[in-house]
Image (spheres, rainbow, N blue to C red):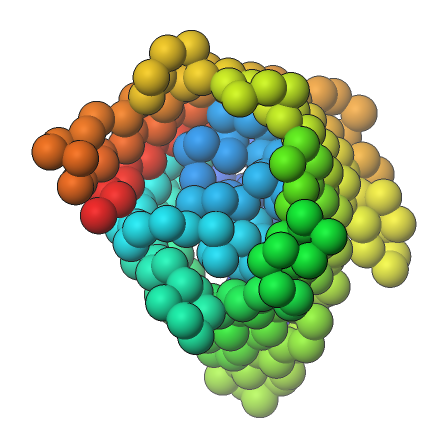
Length: 306
């Protein structure tokens, strides 16, 4: 089997492109751009175009910016599901449990699963992660909250051709003031992927930079940039969130993968929350993102706050 240099999904690229060649010969698929480890895991964030690094205030912070876990006020159990491009070939699921700071920092456990049904073959990708966050300084310092976070990740691929497993490490920072927040998440600072053949790979370094501004108590806008040592500026994401009324949110955004695709992808989403006896909050989030080469993708997220 041809050696893969861009991690688990590189083998999936070849098979998936071959399967879809009648639809788009040689098309660029953003699901395989940076590998399975970079697939988004939140319908809320996707409704904002994926601009979430400087927001990162719910369970999905464990992906976008683990330093944001310190801002959880209650425990959260979060899920997400999507059928990528609506083709029935690639399904992505996510499950996470996150705890607020109880005096020793905040933490989260998560599992991300990508299943590829490319009959007669099936491919499976799994990522398990432990996320931890704590304050960098005291909460009151300069009226700014500064926090840091890490991800410890174990990865596994199962395919008819070759299996692999490995690990990677992320580190992040988040600063928040009353109106402005800013953050950075450095993904795959170091990593190692071991293949059955004895070949070893590493994951490409990716740096996500984000800034967010609270327009008022019910609206915010956010901007993210992806940079890397090879492509410098790899992509951008811009989005906003508005609370229309209590527990009802509207979101919109756009994104572009620079160096790869000149077309903008648009997204929109909604969020609905319900309080039960002020102790349990059930939240539903939905997002839809466009694609210039395939059908759009629907994202569904459910979370429980307790």
